[in-house]
Image (cartoon, rainbow, N blue to C red; front, top):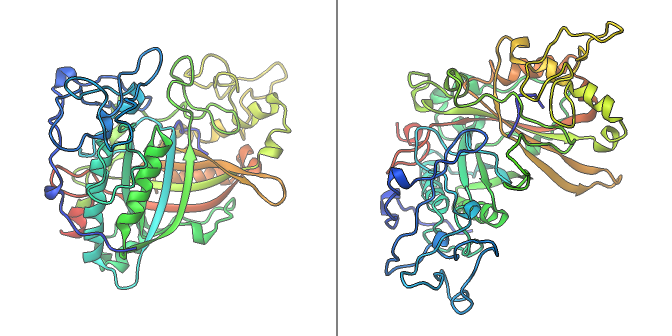
Length: 457
């Protein structure tokens, strides 16, 4: 856990151009300007006159006031019903109405603010499925993601799980694993940066829960919206692909704290202080593949390292707060470095106490993971916590679904993890149980699907 963290039957193949028309976008002056911790604005549309067709989820609920949301009792059970008003329009609460755009230079879910609920799922192509089937699948997935992220039901066979909810900052992100390229006959298009990660001494990897041909990340600020998207993606896979593994995670819900703050992990530590920010001049250089990058189909894309990191919480919680802070190198209360100041004060690596000992221990996690201690290696960490119950020994199966983004994992994740492998004080209290590396192409423009440049190039 590097310190740079925050954060069936086969369905018919319908192109994006055949999707039902959507409402006109909000004019710029009406768009929301609020930004999340990682800097991506979300722009829910203002209420608009109802059409004669189906009313979308985002227009279902009444205006949220001091007493909360209001549903029309008479119409609530009759489909996508509108709240009682003369023009059949309504407003969702701010959390439900927040919308992330599907189309763009980069895929959603990378710089999007941390979401309250997440699902990570990997698929393998089935026997007989190749490039053609993969292209049809990514076309279906992109169409579904676009509709769901806009707060609309799926094009057909919607399960109604999220019928009375808005977009809720839903994001769906797609990536390709190393094994995908051979199965799709695209070996020459496989990026060098997608070479398998090296072995690390701290690894205890379950191969059945690692890697995969295709990877999907789903995030939302409502659990039912996230689950709805997960089921839709799984159903869209049809006969083309089967689930290899799935992991479910969570973060603190928006608005649960008195003011916006860096997230905490299940160890109680503030986790994400030194994450790169989109406002930094070299952010794109560190996180995204340049437009002139190689291969060309990865322009605007990024590489995701995914690790299931078990936290040995029973052992961790036996430590005193002082000892926990020594392991991390930061105060537990506010995330400030042990050398003093606030959470954002630069860490003084040379500061000593009255006995001449380093205030920030030499093996402290925060010291080891600093970019200036790793040749400038940087990655955007965007994790979810997980808790999968209690094992047979009565120990919680809980920890971090580590997801980090970088332009090149050989210059981002790998050098930092190698250094952690050599002497991180935190390694005693965690265990890496699964791993994956995925090439996540740039975003799709209107009328295209994610990965089209690879699959049809």
